[in-house]
Amino acid sequence: MNKKLTVLVLTGAMACAMALPAMAAGNTATPTSTPVSAEISVSLPDSVLYYGTVQEIVKDAEGNITQLRMNSERYGAYVMNLTDQTVWIDSGRRTASEPAALREGEGLYVFHSAVETSSLPPQSAAFAVVRNIPMDAGCAQYHQVEAVSLENGQLKITTDNGGLYLLADEDTTLSVYGSDEAAALEDIQAGSYVMAWYGAVAESYPSQAHAVHLMLLPGEAQAQESTLTRGELAMMLYEQAGKPSVNFAMDYTDVADDAAYAEAVRWISSEGYMGGYGNGAFGPEDTVSREQLVTVLWRYAGSPMLMDYPGLSQFSDVGEISRFAQPAFAWAHQKGYITAVEGDVLAPQSAAGQELAETMLKELAVQK
Image (cartoon, rainbow, N blue to C red; front, side):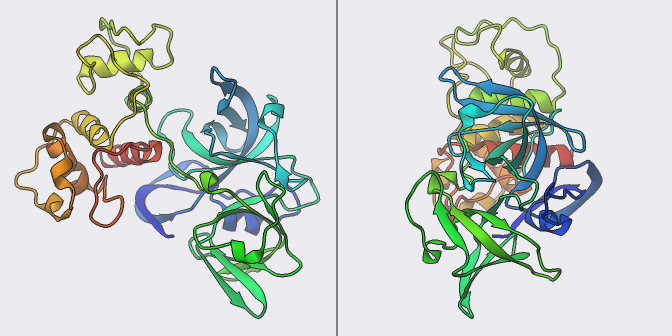
């Protein structure tokens, strides 16, 4: 699937640290690097590969890992946001890995969303965490299957926006993530996600490589967006604004002074971009809808008004947009910040995803 987005171009090349040639790493993922001040239309990769060392492991009250704060001598500091959809891979054993065994100081490969926050350090959603990478074998690579076809007895898997063909045959071993269930080549379909182990990549376009092993990932691991909460949105916008200090009396009953989002909520309330419910609560853990997201960012952009914008009339559920959100939705659509979720459906009342918010914030930063 080709993903088009106007972004700051990320440059640089990351070589896999083992026997996998530098070209393979370049074909399978675009590494994080210093942005170049050029605004062009590019095809976003399905994932971005980052290598670094774990500096801090952040867990929730139940002990689940929610963030990895990482650092790389080459690529700098980065924060990986993890969910229960993130897969954990033992590259050497070609099996699922146990997150609880992770320790600070360990070196990891992380495949994450191509969309990142503009904060320092940047943050992004992690799709796959790869551990135990032997020095004498190609490391596991995360891929979306865009198309499959059978040619000369080989299964050809198209991935990387059409830039890479993975060839699989009777010599390719198969497995299912976190399961002893048997897998077959016909189980790999367009829309699937796989971890792939392969060696040299042919110098051609599209590039080609023979898959030694393929691990079919579950549907839950297919790069699904995490829903966005009010506290998270406040923090994202606060970081983009440079974390300004404000003197504002905040007395929400559900925002503790030592909460991670406390200063963000203080600032965003003082600016009038978000407010409480009127009953003394802010609702930092409540999910943000798509219309609420565009309304907050519209206010942040200065509440620009469009006169007689006809662009929303083409959508079948335009009548579901709340009155307060109508000018914001018109603005966001006219700017290209938000589009239909499918067909002619805008889904204004549906939950907004973190990646949508990150994309919109990045677009706002580019166009300011």
